[in-house]
Structure formats: C-alpha cells, structure tokens
Amino acid sequence: MSSCAAETSGGPSTPPWTEGCGRKVGDTLCELTLMGYGHEVEAPYALERSLRGLVQSAPRPHALVLLGGSWCPSCRKATQFLVAHHGEIAPHYTVVNVLVEGAKPTEPARKSHLDEWRKTHKTPFAVLADGYESPMAARDALGFREVALVVDRATGEVLARESTLALLWPALTKTR
Image (cartoon, rainbow, N blue to C red):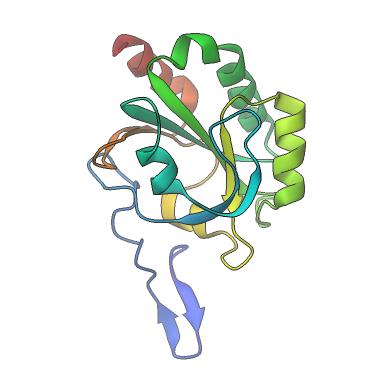
C-alpha cells in the first residue's frame, strides 16, 4: 500500500489527493483543511483553515509553502532562514509553513507543536498542521518535510517544487 493510501473497512482506498495536489509542478493545490494560524502575526488559532483558501487570500501573487516537522533540525533552520529573510521575500511571496510531522516522523503535528514553533521562531507568516480528524493528511497529500513549493494565488497551480528550501531559493531570488 502506498503512503497515500488509507485503510478502510473495505480494504485500501485512494484519497482524492493522490493524483495532483501539489506533488509535482503543474498540479493544482488540493483542498486540505488544516488547523493553525493565519497570515497575520497576531492571527488567532483556528481548528479549520483551508490551505488553498490561505493561498488564494494571500496578498501576493504567489505563495511559498514550506513543509516541515517539529522534530526536524533542518526544518527549523529553513524556518529560521525564512524568518530572517522575510523582509526581502514578503513583497513577492506570501509564506505558509505547514508542519506535516510532530515530535517524531510518524506522529502528526498538533497545536502544541504549532505554538512552540511560533514562539521559538517568531514566525511572521501562517503556520499550519493537520486537523485532529485527519492526522498525516498534509504529508500524504503534499509530501514529506523539507519540501518547498511556489503556488500561484489565482489558480492554485504549483509553479515550482524542490525537495528543500535551499534548492528552491535561487529560483525565488531570480524571479523577484
């Protein structure tokens, strides 16, 4: 069974996001309901936030979506880098940080992880994680930690995707 398949009483089934959903350039970002904090620094916590809705409501023409894990040292470094460079990237991209893993790679991120992430990194951008009803859905749909995507606000199309922010960064700086 693939990592995108889910067990049901009738055997394995394929979630609607197995095809597309941002797994490759040209895909349209699927509708994922996540929990977390919105674009504003003082945004309140919400049990249901639409990833696609956040991208579509972004004030910039493109969104930079960074996947991470709260346990992951390189994910922490990537987020710290984005916080440090937010002033130069914010005029061009709206940043959305999605924690797809919690304290371990096999555990979903929860509100406590989001709160710790925002407090530690002082993120001036949206920080999200899977909702309680759908643990690991974001990772299954979008990919594992450290993946970075550029998404068109109007269409939801993935314009660029790399396995790390470091690999995507040259393309981000070139298009500004």
